Length: 251
Image 1 (cartoon, helix red, strand yellow):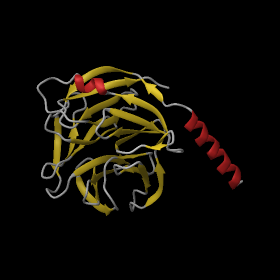
Image 2 (cartoon, rainbow, N blue to C red):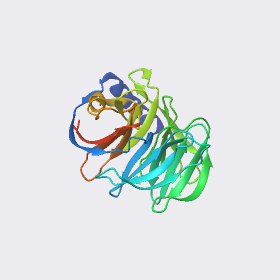
Image 3 (cartoon, rainbow, N blue to C red):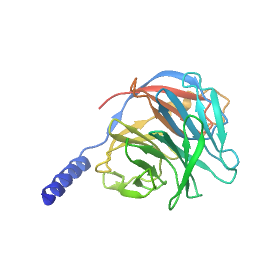
Image 4 (spheres, rainbow, N blue to C red):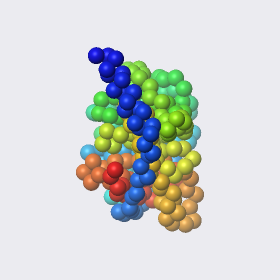
C-alpha cells in the first residue's frame, strides 16, 4: 500500500511539472487608505478584522486596522531590538515572526497580550496556516510546516517552478487549499501546491504599484490578506499609502 501511495504522489508531481503555471488575471474592486509609514510584513483578515505586522528595528509593531478605511485601531510596539516579520492567527492565538532574532511571539488577538515565545533556526520571513499547522518561509525556496503548540517542524516543502527552486519566498497566505507566496523584491505572487511544492499559478501585480498616489516612498509589494466572505484579496506593500481589494480569476 505504501508503494502505491508513493507512485500516486510521484504521478501527481510529474503531471504538475509538465503543466505550465496558470497566469492569473485580476481586477481592482476598490482602493483603501494604508498608513504610508508602515513597513508591512504580514497581513491577515480574521472574522472580518484586519491585522498587520510591521518591521524595521525600533519601529516594528503589531496592529489592528479598520478593514474599510485602513485606519489604525490599536497598535502594540515590539521590542526595539527585534525586526518584526510575518504573522498569522490560528484559533485564539496570533503568531508573529522576527527576522534574525530566531524568536516567534504568540499574542492574544483581542488584547495583544503576550502568551509565550518560541525559538526556531534560521531567519523568519512569512507566516500562514492551513487551519491546523503553521506554514513558514525563511527567504529560501523551502517552506516549513510547524506545530503551533511547540513550534517543531513537522515537514519541509521545496517550492519549485518546473525543475528550478523558487527562492525569496516571503509573505504567505493560505487560500482554498493552496499557498500564495509573495516573491521578495518583485510584485509577483506564486500559487503553490502544498502537496508537491510546484508553482501552479502566477499573479503579476506590477500594475498596482503604478496606481499608488504620488509622491510616495513605496517599496516592494508585501501584504496578502484573503477575505473568505467575498473571495477577494487585500493587497498592500512596504510604505504603500494604499491597500487594494482585488478579485482574482479562478483557475
